[in-house]
Length: 372
Ligand SMILES: Cc1ncc(C[n+]2csc(CCOP(=O)(O)OP(=O)(O)O)c2C)c(N)n1
Ligand code: SF4
Ligand SMILES: [Mg+2]
Image 1 (cartoon, rainbow, N blue to C red):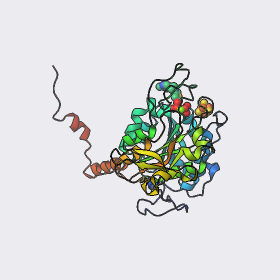
Image 2: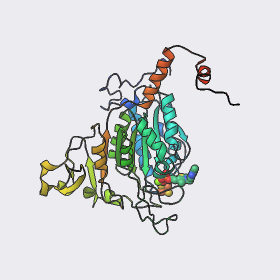
Image 3: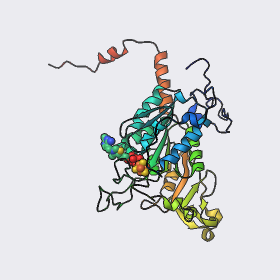
Image 4: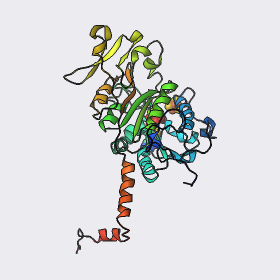
């Protein structure tokens, strides 16, 4: 970092908004601000985008390149780490540092980057196969550790790159080349999984809703700690129409359960539907507002310390073919991040004195024995 660098000041000034957007980005505290204003073109690389025509990945890329300049950070202090899959080609197309890494390991590599470099904004791009099959283990650990990274999970409910095998988010009975008689296993709900790992920021959005996608991504970056954003992403080649119910203007009003912190959960044409909570079981269900009355509706609270409320909400998502799903920010709570704590611990250890022989002392320590 050079002497002229200015840092995102949000840790000291939680309400400041250095980029004039009115949003505070605590997740970027420590990342140097760009000296020049940047625009969308600055975040567009010279690489030819190689996704199929109509792929939902294009819309996410466009939204990402559109909001990055607003963050005000230096491009060279941004790293995008991806795994393997169609979606994982993403880092090629954004003109920042990037790693198209190893299948399922993007979250592990991102943990290293975020811990070693406080001055870097770290994004993870992953697919439902990459994050939840081979990378399932790494995903839950990055979330429980609360490493300061923003994870974009492109969920098209299929393996796209390898030409259409079922994935851990495909509905039971999915007929694919690898499951010609229909898949047998229960799918993951990525939001439930993340909340089970007590992730501190968990949200869901839709590739085709640019405004919502952008607002959720901004909130995810503003959050300090692990942010998991599930993006419903259409794969027109191998799983076309998986999210039609929530995308089709004819059905979307009754299909999208919108989550807005502090507001009653109400939706449907003319707001005729709502969500209530069973006091005994804690489970949520969808009801006709006319039958229960407005006052009975649950009010969304994304800031509860206990993730149970958000988890119960996530269960309103159809596990089978999707007809209805909550969309928005399920959980957004403050907690210490692994990388901040690790840096503090290293600084403390260094302040206690420079024992150059510490490693040798440990090796020679009490727990050694001679083998004859
Ligand atoms: C170790 C290893 N195992 C398997 C593969 C094959 N493979 C590549 S991408 C992929 C799944 C991609 O699916 P997803 O993460 O959903 O991404 P999408 O292509 O749908 O965006 C698999 C199984 C691989 N590249 N490396
Ligand atoms: S196979 Fe599907 S996910 Fe992959 S680029 Fe083509 S449309 Fe997109
Ligand atoms: Mg996929």
